[in-house]
Image 1 (cartoon, rainbow, N blue to C red):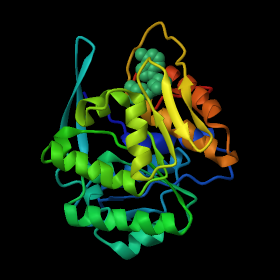
Image 2 (spheres, rainbow, N blue to C red):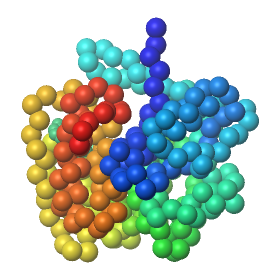
Image 3 (cartoon, helix red, strand yellow):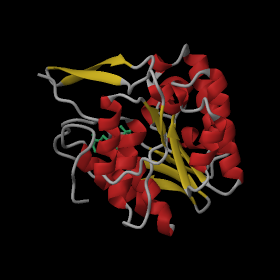
Amino acid sequence: LYRRGFAGDTFNTAWYARRLLPEDWTVAFGSCIGTDAVSAEMSDFMVSQGVDTAALRRVADRSVGLYMISLLDGERSFSYWRAQSAARLLADDPAWLADILKDRDTIYFSGITLAILEPKDRATFLDALRKARAAGKTIAFDPNLRPRLWPDTKAMTTGIMEGAAVSDIALPSFEDEATWFRDANPEATAARYIDAGASMVVVKNGADAVHFRDATGSGEVEVPAITQVIDTTAAGDSFNAAILAGLKDNTPLPQSIAAACKLSGAVVQARGALVETDI
Ligand code: AMP
């Protein structure tokens, strides 16, 4: 018996953002799905969760990416079937892509979004974001470094910094950044994303203090201690949703970070990606 769920980096953030934002804000998920039953069930699930599906495109002969999680002594490992997922076609139709981006205030994507695109489509995607940014939209990016999804380290670090170059907000996690970019400390990570063109950077660091930099300055926000971490899935994704939700009324960044820590702190104390909390 397998238990099926629908989740994944950017969708998790959309799911949490939907909960954090007032009713009259729209949270849409832009991607491609198949024309099969499972794709329709995924879309229905999104609708049931209040996530707008107008930016989902149906393509024939493809389906949603599948993965299974195995548990061994509480440690999770993943098996993937997604080489041919519909989502990999996200940027193969530039006119459709421009259309789904045109009515948004904030557009959020991740390093996984970049990793699953062919180089040609990645260039199309980045170009669409560049144009959206020039048209006044806020672009937010979680580098979400996943070496297994890239041909090699150089391709990953190059691709990630191309993503950074079209972004206003960068939401990296220090441990991964230190591993792959050799940053000495969170300040160095923030500086690298500021140099790439971001105006706001929030560097997550597990249980350690969150470092931030924006137009008003830089600083640290302590992470409240947690007695027992059950499952860190979607910690960063939910954190990002709280930062994005804070943009709606220009909440001061340290205040948004405190809210993000509170939410992700609750998320790591429960199993699964999508955790119902009253935060
Ligand atoms: P990460 O992407 O692992 O750096 O985690 C994102 C956010 O989740 C952190 O900034 C914290 O707010 C929260 N978080 C992750 N791990 C822990 C932990 N062990 N204790 C408390 N909060 C955590």
